[in-house]
Image 1 (cartoon, rainbow, N blue to C red):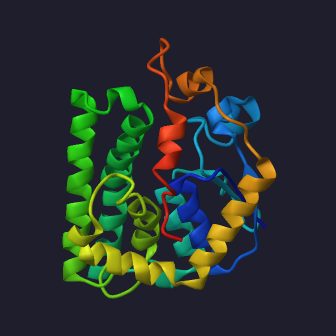
Image 2 (image 1 turned 45 degrees about the horizontal axis):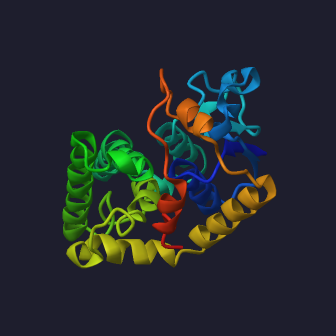
Length: 249
């Protein structure tokens, strides 16, 4: 069986969607990275970076060990179980890989930092906060422009590039940008919303988080999670949660 270690974050959600797409049995294992579980020795043996998601494929033969980083996991799942999600050759393979890498190297980090400055509300209008708001605006603009050219990020077919970007695209309104200004991104997201795999993934994530029942993080938890050398400004969790959910499912 495949085992996926994670929590309710977008990078974990994308892997659960992929697992539902390929139809292989899997088990979810909650790792509370907010409270330091990612730094436990047993988890660091799976991923020395201490981050989720991490996947262990119990079906794999040979020397395939734990796989970390969401982009690497998506490539592995597609090439091992679902070749329709990543063409084996040709121009469309490279379109998929280009947009997958654009998500993991560009969209995810920029939108994640936008989340950080929404959470640390006192810094939202600092230079850093404004910088990441500008970068988030550029991400949504660039992906909307791509989807004006093709129905899917990789071209004519749904792929791991779409799976990778989908959970992050759900932050659009929460980040303060108008859906009306991103019609192609919204139409693409609506099509993915309707996929049965996405509905099953949302239910699986919700069940995992309900069973884990993580408590409210403390200021110390946030300092640890943010890898702060010194204590920083307090996180405004109530304000952050009031912004709404990050997905459209």
